[in-house]
Image 1 (cartoon, rainbow, N blue to C red):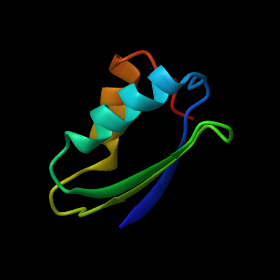
Image 2: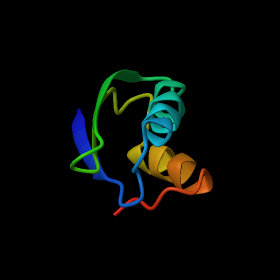
Image 3: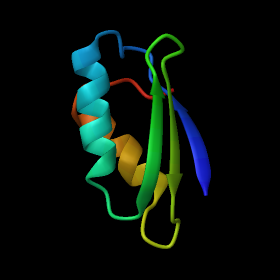
Image 4: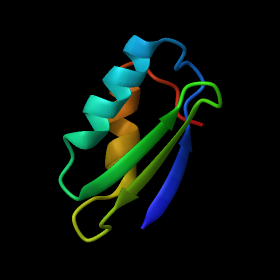
Length: 67
């Protein structure tokens, strides 16, 4: 499954790195592509292993605003 998340407060390269690490630690994630300029993250994952709500919750706990 492929999903795109919009993150409003991802501004720096450090933010991008934090988002990438948070997403990649979830079981079932195959790939993730991050566009800092657009504030978007594309995630390719196996929905059998991963619920997108879990990813969103993890990012919000880290202080990011997922729209």
